[in-house]
Image (cartoon, rainbow, N blue to C red; front, side, top):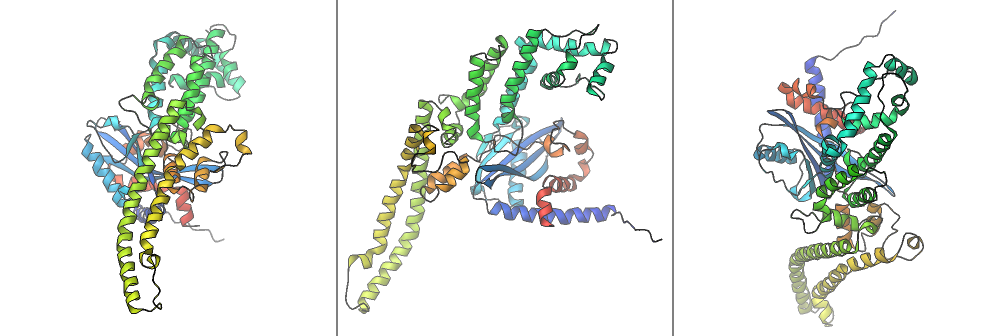
Length: 496
């Protein structure tokens, strides 16, 4: 009987296959990026060892239609930084732009995380710090080192470790779970909080030798977990549309919960509130020296989220947006005037020559000769009226509540639509405002980190440094393999 034959590619054959596929992938990505008017780039720096760092650069593109939008993240590069100087990062960044034919003018924002790994101040074009990493640092610093949590942390660890010494406790826990029960003794405190509530029945066992926490402490664990669930969407990498317009509404929600002490956390909650206020001051306080107006403008341009802004914030957002629209209109007018000047002179000369020939029977009026000049004046008036659209938008979202908005006649789109769909429907009426809104509402708050690129599970958050260290001598080939694996959906379409 004939047996099937299988051929395993040799090392050189495998390398040829990877090179071929990677080249096709890069060409496909370049084509896709070229059709994107404004592009958000994500940049993360992760220190592997004292002298080894990796920079991950990716592109984030909103995809979808109607009320369903996601963020498509495309891995562009996984490169080595030769040192810890800013010029090393700049050199890598410029090279990636060249590799994918990305024009600096097409960049909307460069969302960055891990820049503290660089010893010098780094300035990239349109650089913006990842809010996700900033909030994550605030929360994990608080939960790991807050003095108000010291007693609770100590009692929880005492309870967890008591399962190792209490006779029969681990066996009983495994029986209840119907699989081997493992204690999270090496995990972070935030992970332990999750584990306590996942296996609450096990941690509330009544057995000799166990040292359970009190009911009051359980209530605090539940409260901390509830706060974690509110913050989590802003801390984790996700392909959902977690963009800058969602930040202020979530901050307002967290502050209300902590100020009213809904979960009865007492000093623990007050301490977190204090840390949170410091972290978000650059977003919420216009007087802050590093105030970033991106968040407040984006929130105002989301008709569903704008209600979370107070009157002062709304007034500031309106003023900033009016200023930006005016600036864009003037720049556009300059470009159009340069084009029209050349076209107008040619047209005027042609009309004069035509009149000289008498080819129209001698009829002559100003409009026939100076038509382009009249059109230029009309276009100028039209451009000025577009700036008033900002006032109309803010009047509309300020005077109608969510119930009325479903039935009233509106100048703009339906506010119940997804924000990007809402502004897409307004593009023909107010192109400058629609364009600005689309740019702001598509800015992600996260970056694609080294951990996520190297993880083989969506829930994994542990950095696999061995993969990097074992491929130090083949960085270029390793990068190609990562590009193919992470961008596998694009690769699949190339061969479908």
